[in-house]
Length: 255
Image: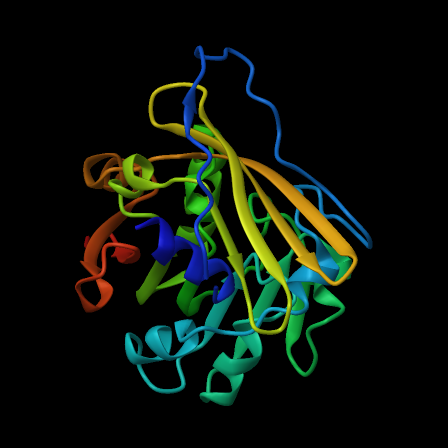
């Protein structure tokens, strides 16, 4: 499980031997943050590092789950790692991110600089896409706001596709170190469990002499919790795409 997670983040190859440790529950959780050269977004993502990443089959999976030529609203598009390939596959994409530095890397596509929670485009799409495990925010109110944005922007016959870790990932994940052929290194370190269903960790990326870190806290969503969160946004779980519980397709609640 841990190795699969590393591959999703980085295309990778060796495990470290540090351990996961338990900590006492926290009443005030720290916010996500990042360090390193170049712009760092409000939630801790390193723009210069993200700009080096390439798709790993995700656009093809999304393309195969929706009608040809479907319009797509991509929330949290980042530097366009997925965006550009979706356009090549024949989709009209609107890319949304709160970081202008991220959006500057997206070309030939309509972009909107906005937080996900406050987005109000006044139009709807065949697909609303929320990837990169954003749905697993530790803030339940923020998750509700994310899903409300998805609901108000999806067409009545459309879909919302979410990416989340299968619940058992939270039990199996362990520290990782992987080195790629191009010389870059990915590490997942300093794992802790600040409260039930929460995981805190730091990712570390190096390319040559450049090094970035990203501290994050995420929350396990089991299937029941996921369905309840969707229901509060007037959405229902339709399927796991290709039977993979990481990829969730939801639809507006039928009238």
